[in-house]
Length: 235
Length: 235
Image (cartoon, rainbow over all chains, first blue to last red; front, side):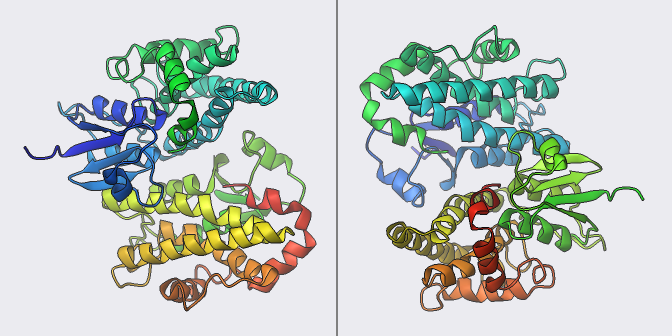
């Protein structure tokens, strides 16, 4: 049997992998998921991403693309429409709006995973600070959502796009650390629009299977706690 | 007098500002450089980049674009040709090559400024480690240059592009920390292609005025040492 044209090397629990899988589903593309073993790095991964040795890697006809936000843009440029032929752009068409979405996607990856990492850990003092920083970041993202969504359901307006993927891919872990650290982050009283957005997005057909319940992330964190750094490290 | 259509808020010594100014010159665009005062943040900067409060900010008809690599892509999308009408794309046309260039640009900003920051400092032990890491990064970039340039003068082949800007903007500081820390980094014996590339690029008409001699960066580092963090912080 020949290799699939599109393969993704990853682990289900990595937010950076999750966003790539959702993007492929949104585009209606068939792909093979090549699951890594936690704590090991396969020969295929080491060969495909020799610089960072990190997931995810998208293999397109065997050629590797690394770094999740780079992968999302690659997917968007190679497959501007869905497999059914309908337009399904991830990034907005207007250059200024594209720049704003790129800005916030980078902001998310700068702020969210570093705080999640601390909140999964054991140092109570650091946790308070990280929870505060993450809450402040979500507050800014709530404002950004109001400005960018124009009263519609997604950051990009009517359809799920690049910035939605950048943020929703972290939602599983954000909900998990709410339980692990006993903090309220996606709090209806503080970020109501973002909570409603997260609920809607997590129920979306392209997203629902990619982001399991928070309990599964909690379980994963307990089981593979010592590997939390490499799992969250890759972008 | 009305405001210029394109303005850049920055400081001459910031690599992230340097790359934006070079991009505007490559496109043949007129712009106004709004220079910040070291150690202060102007009202205009705080208003234009309230999230990070960092330079550079590109103001296009008053609308702010932040984060230097986002700005480069914005410039490329708004002005695909130079002011003379000649094609002057910064990013390659092919999606795979674009992804590779985006990957390396991100790699550069992950590895180079953090090492430069340590090498400007006073801790000798850290310096050895930082010099080693930076030398290793330059070695990988030498290999990337060989693979991507196809025997031509730039990372993108025949003309100066996105990845060239991402790296050349750090060259002034790399040469400065060679002097400050007494280490050889852009070393002909180790990275000959990269040294030749840097010499060529720094003599390019769009680059030559944007990157002063290493001595000017050294002088700046001595004068504003305590401000080295904010200067290198912004992306």
